[in-house]
Amino acid sequence: MTHNVEQPWLIDARDLKKHYSVKKSLWGKTANVKALDGITFTLARGKTLAVVGESGCGKSTLGRLLTMIETPTAGELYWNGQNLLEADRQSEALRRKKIQIIFQNPYASLNPRKKISQILEEPLIINTDLSKAQRREKVLAIMSKVGLKVEHYDRYPHMFSGGQRQRIAIARGLMLNPEVLIADEPVSALDVSVRAQVLNLMMELQQELGLSYIFISHDLSVVEHIADEVMVMYLGRCVEKGTKQAIFSQAKHPYTQALLSATPRLNSQTKQERIKLTGELPSPLNPPTGCAFAARCRYKMPKCEQESPSLTSYEGQQVACFYVQLAETRI
Image (cartoon, rainbow, N blue to C red; front, side, top):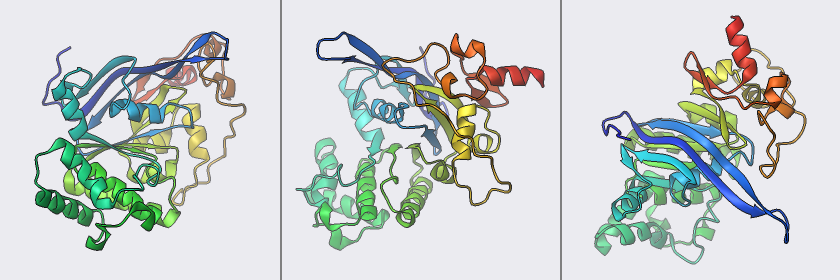
């Protein structure tokens, strides 16, 4: 497949899949877990794509695939038109420099035995030919950008607060001048006041450096603050995708509607009815036939238990739901 390098997007993912073989018991047969089962999206330059859904829906798996911590079982992945799945040194170097990740727990992702200076210099030592003086200058410049002081340079991670540690994690992600940052629940472990500071910092850095974000979260109130586009996932598949304005003002998929109804909204003009989902998220070891959400859906039809709906476009939004298809054709 030929891709135009002048496309307006930086990441182009086509039908990405990640399957794992696991044993059901010590002596039992292996089962195929479809953690990610065909995800397609593009990430525009300087924009934020939020990936939302319950725990176990495949959000973090997607983040690991995009940074090549794990390789996809199937699918295509391009950065600026270049194939990132090619096993050559040029593609590997490109991935390391252009796509970085910020993990959920900043303390767990920082080596407690290394000073902040060592943690931040490590990517430069591995990937550049900068001298020791140049590395120090670069580290101090990035520390300043994320609100850290010069005196923090020789301190250890345990000497910082949670918010400061996340700033260090963001600084490490910026060391190689990436164009894309994958943020995997970057503020969920932080207090509410600190969370706002880190979110504002990320938005300021995006404006200043022209960064593109893939923001993985289960918190829709955070997503509403930072996202440009939203992709809603359920059991390894995308069930709805669209602009932030479209998703938050006129969500079509019953699952998206339920997520939004459970989200506190300070600026909401009208009180939203709480939609309570009954039942549990189906096991990926034994996914249901048909639509994965059917067992919990208030609009379930017989067709939903027999066939799996595909993403269909409705005025810019993409939704995978037979009920929405039926409702739209009646309009």
